[in-house]
Image 1 (tube, rainbow, N blue to C red):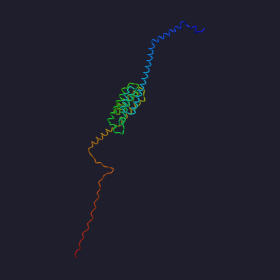
Image 2 (tube, helix red, strand yellow):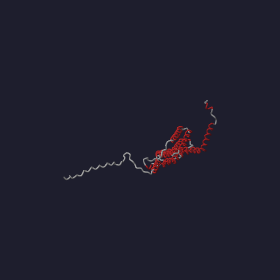
Image 3 (cartoon, rainbow, N blue to C red):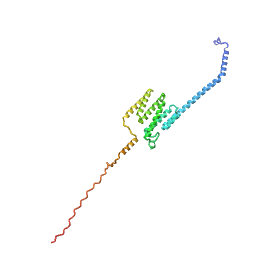
Image 4 (cartoon, rainbow, N blue to C red):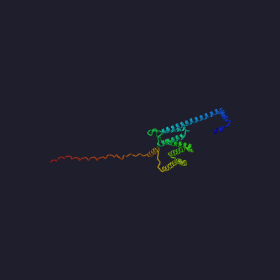
Length: 270
């Protein structure tokens, strides 16, 4: 006899029929709810995918605007990008640091950001250069304050520290520059950036060497010194042309008059 026939249980068909009936009843009672749950999950997944694509587009747009502003070199455009895309990754920090670097470079070159060095209108006075250094220092300080404790922003923090030190040194604030570089070296070593730590230490040593060098005076200071020197000298001296001296002509002696001939004498009478 077939083994399967020996395992036939009486009433097995009725039991199976009862299970099918229960499943049908379950679907009738909860099927619509299950469909709603499945539809809700699908809608949530679709919404999540749409949001992720939207975020990616916004991030791409922010970085594209940042790249364009960096190429143009305008601090105002860079700061606008930083404000409008503050929530997009590290765009705000990158744009702010780039604006600080633009002001710093402008102070070094003596030309307005994006200006023409050959144009007198774009050349900066010493006071304007100092204002650019101050503005750069302020922007670097803003970045340092925002990302100081964020481990993911370590490179931006160090970049801002180096910029702050450069702006301080350009303003003649050697102590503030040295402090910023020491902090940068400490952070770089703690967060495992030894090359950047050494860079900061090398800059500190270079600053120490530069302290012993004679001071370079600005153009305005030189002009003021020249005016003071010319004002203090009240005596006027004749200029002498050493290459071609002017001497008075030598007068030649007048010729001596010729001796007069003796007057003729009359003969004596005989």
